[in-house]
Image 1: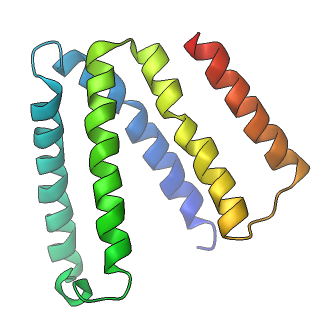
Image 2: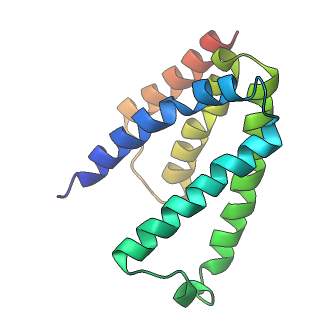
Image 3: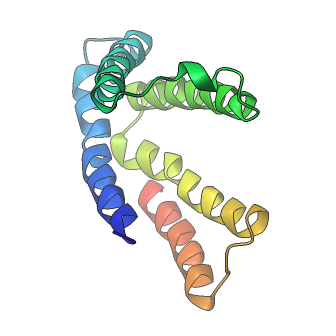
Length: 139
């Protein structure tokens, strides 16, 4: 149970790995902005179903002290998705996805700096090689 996050991480990785190729196919005909809308409409419907199934509601959190954080991340997510979909519509998956994937490196560094997570030699090497891999793949 303590490492259940690893199972969720692996499932997320597998599912998200299929997003860019499916988007690329769909956006041969569907423009990027409608694609964002349609895919996120599906997201809202499915998440709404999960909330109902779990008997949860977002309403108690509308006045929570961290709600502004969620609103800010919603804005950032919107900008990120709109620009990611547009980049995929215009460019090759093999270049767009690795550059987009730099968010993993930046998020890791923020975790280390802002949340006092341990910076081990292995993590430092991983960050370095991740950047190197992204540079090599996207060139």
